[in-house]
Structure formats: C-alpha cells, structure tokens
Length: 415
Image (tube, rainbow, N blue to C red; front, side):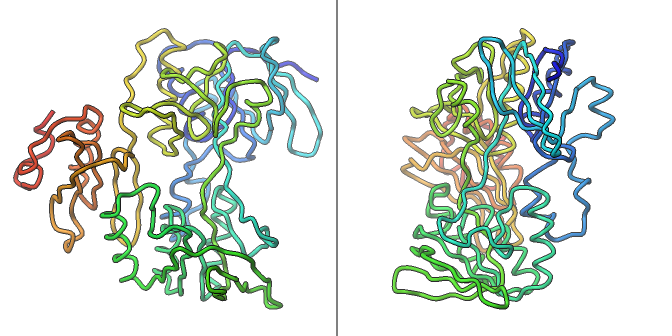
C-alpha cells in the first residue's frame, strides 16, 4: 500500500468534481489537489451523449472537459480507473482500488475531501434487463454503442418519457426509425414540467412521428432468436416488438461510500447551504448532493450541469476563505424535436401562467406566477427570456402580467 500526498481530494471527475479543482486553482489554492475517476478516460461532458453526439461521428475525445496538459499545468493530480472503496474519517484517509486488474490498493490522505460521486442509472426490474440490445445512456461507451445500433435497427423502443428518452427519441426519429415511447405517467416529463409545456412537447413529438404509450409499464420482456425484443406491457396485456430498447427511467445517487462512512444521506449526501456535510472535513456536490434550494422547504437533489458547477464554486470559495456565491434558482436545458428548451425554476406550485410569444411559431416562453411573484419560466427558442429569467426567478421578481405578455418589453428591464 502506497500513501499519496494530502491536500484536497476530489472523488468523482465529471462536471462537479472537475469544477472544484478548476475553481480552487482560480481562487489561489496552492495545496495539492487530487482528482479521482473510476473511468479510464479524461473527464468529459455528459449532456451531449443523448443529444448532438448521437447524430455525428464526433470522437469521444472531443467531449473532454479539459486536456491532459491542463491538469498537468495546474498541478492537479488526475488518477484514472480507480475506485474509492472506503473513507476513514478519523484518520482522514481514503482507500482506492486499481480497476486495471492489478489489485493495487492505495491509501490517500486528505485535508479536505469532496464527494462528487454523481449517480447511476436505474435499471429495469425485469429479467433480461442487461441484454446487449437494451441500452442505458450514461457514459461515452454507452453512447457509442447506441450510436452504432441506431444505424442498424428499424424500430426503437424507449422506456421513460424524460429528458434522456425524449432526446434519444428525437435522434432516432430524425434517422427515420420507428419510435415507441413507453411511460408510466400520464404525460411526458410529468414530474418536471407543468401540463402546459408537457402538452406542447407532446404535440411536437407526435408531429415528428413518435408514438407514445402513457399510463403503461413494462411487465416482462423476451429476447427473440434474432435478438429483437418482445415487450409485455400493462395494463391490457399489450405487446410491442422492437429491435432496440433504450431505458431512461431516472438515476440513483451514488451515496453508498458516504453512507458507509456514517455521513447523513437521504437519496443523496445531505449538505448545507455551503455544500458541507455533517463532517467538517467532507463536502459534496453535483448529482450526489442533497440541499435545500431557495424558497423550498424540503431538501432535494438537482441533476444539472449548472447545479454541479455552482455547488463546486461554492465549495472552492469556502475552502479558499472567500465569500460563498449566493444560491440561484436551478436551470436546465434540452434539445428535442428541433427546438431548444430552457427552464428556470423547478416548482410545480403556481396559480397563473402567462404565454409570451406564439406556440405555433415554436418561439415562446411560459411565465408561471404564484401570488403575483414569478416562480418559474420555461422557454422555447427564446434564449434572451431564459437569461433574464435566471435572475428574475431567483429573486422572485414581480412582473406585471401585461408586460410579461408584451414582446416589445424585454424581461431584462425588470428586477
């Protein structure tokens, strides 16, 4: 067992983990930084994997967040293909396992530990869920497999009408494939979108030839001799045959390491406003972290690049003794069926909604109000509205509703 140099150690090297390292150096941190990844490639962007990456022959290397030279120039120690298996909080030390098959075990001390362990895809609870023609999109390897498969199949089945499912459905339909989306809820993105936006997107996807099966669940599947799939659906004993099945039914926080170390977890690692856990030497950020957003009562886990980056910057500022950035309303984006969807705010609690623009032109925003305060904005192909909404929703600005409807009035003039 060899012992590596302490300093700040970051477990997980996606957007959150990499941003912690970047921001520490930008804030003048001069102590050792170690960034640990279980994957054997340079840390990379994940959002394109279900979007543009599927439509091109772009190499996976093009998705890298930073070059190898950057990490070397910034004196950031990057350890690839290693899994952190244990945290000794009393000794302030972690144990790493080499995943290259060499069974090498390392002991890494830390002054401060950042858990940016992310999440993993939720698997289908049926026999055969690991078959080669069933794909879960999480890594470049998954996306490469899907990209190749889309060139060979005719009928793509998709479980889950969330962001991943709808983005893959968009690409498959664009490639001329028959696409069937199976969703347990009564509409697309039901847990994330108000009914007004769900209805618009549903119509838009239907116009592109995508067929939806709502209030429907997968009960069983059969692998046919030609490796195609036969799905048994409920209710009503429905049957659906497809050549390929893509699954996007959510993720589960990677908090087992934290739980085993005795940190407080609840569908993720519980952290405070500064992303500090209940151990003063351990922070958490990104998809694995649970905190309370502005204006919310209950803590939640936000899966977005913006949240990962913002939380990483908060941790870096705190560790460098600088003012911690203010929390902001969460914002997200998605590319589906030829439109750019941008959202600010996650609440579904509103009492009025204002249409700004025309849905028929596929260029509009929906502004949601609660007691005359702006609590959420969903935009279709209106990036200027979205940029203004980030600030306005965070501050719960009151905007006169007639002004909100008036396209001659810029939203950036408010607040």
